[in-house]
Length: 566
Image (cartoon, rainbow, N blue to C red; front, side, top):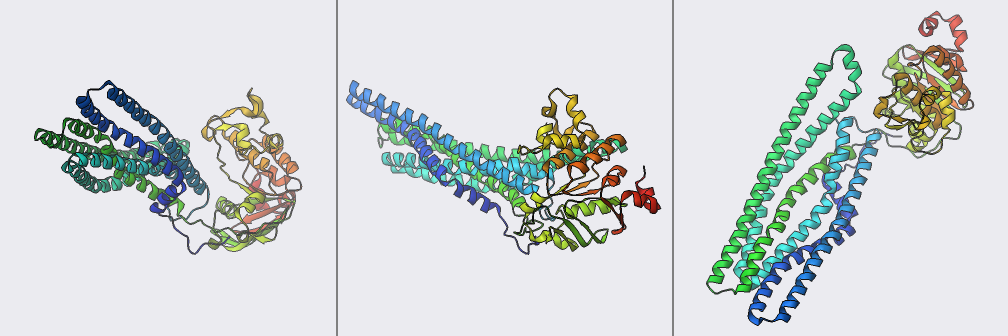
């Protein structure tokens, strides 16, 4: 894997273009159907005017019957075109929002550039609200075009009655859009700020939930809550500002539309009074003046929604355009590979060098917890290759030359604080449902007592973050998940710190038995795991200072004995 020199950035406008291009077919179909809906709606007052004119002139029951039939056709067209048009557009909207949610979530699970100041709560907001609002562009464009169709049909129909009426509609619509387009820019900037502040508030909540117990432990919960209240108040104030701007926008749009409709009605009345248009045309003009309020409302709201969609797309671009920490290679390691760390310097690590042979069970006793964390980060690819000296090899091949998929397929570094997800014990152990050796992993991790406690067994419901499990149960569940993955190379970091000594002994023996023939590295200070290992490496002051079996080190190294004896 190589650190990229340049990354093609994705801008908000590019995201919107991608969404539009990907749903072009659905948008064309939706535009045709919604245009037909608006045309039929516009035809209704036109038909009423013609009916009044011909009925008064001919006074024929046949003409009346034809008129009623025409109205029935128009009403049916309005109903069906709206139903199927909105179905097409909303399906495309929902599907596109899902695509962006998955993409943002997937990118959030990958390492991203460190200069992107986004927390997990902010990424969550972007993956939900911003993805939905960006996908709204798929509905906005067809509704904008169909509303324009309605306005043009109304202008043409009024123009045929009297050219002044048609010009009044066209000029009035242009004036309304000019005013509202200026106002929509304020909405876009206010919405961007609101989304950012709401996301920060969400991130603060996520941090508080994760750290609530430690906060209670040292009495810092009051200060933390005050901090959240401040962030939340800022988000509330910005939301009020956005609501105020939206209210002014909606009120202005409604007032301008009403003024235009009133102007058309009064002008038509004056023309009818002067004998320039007949009664039927007057009825048509009054009906169109009332009807045109709806497409004008939709038409005038579209700039606002476009600006909101663009603001959301630009926030998504913060995640999607962030360059990855590493650019994966394309190679694959051989089956059953070994793991080699060669002269790695990173943080407190100073030329760390060791090798875990294929099928070997090795324990590493790190005297400094920070060194253990930094070594685990390097092995887990959380540190870009250019951030440390030396190399890490899997099966004799440098990790920088291997694809991310290949590394994850052959190497698993189980985190110290493995996340527990809402679901069941089974879905936490085997998230993909691929039929991994769940029973063997449960037995090896000594999770059997948790399974036996509940009538549902492995189908026992687990709450978010394992809230209904103890610390030891959560740790064993995380260990079971790592063991069930059955990868060629497994790295465990302090997998038994929250269990009692007897359980720890059983887990150490079971893990060594289950992983026999598989490459395993355990970073730990547990005497049981150290004793179960084929050999022990001692990491002190950033270098490997000793290597032997656990019992030989106990007998010969007093510092080691003091460090690991409990």
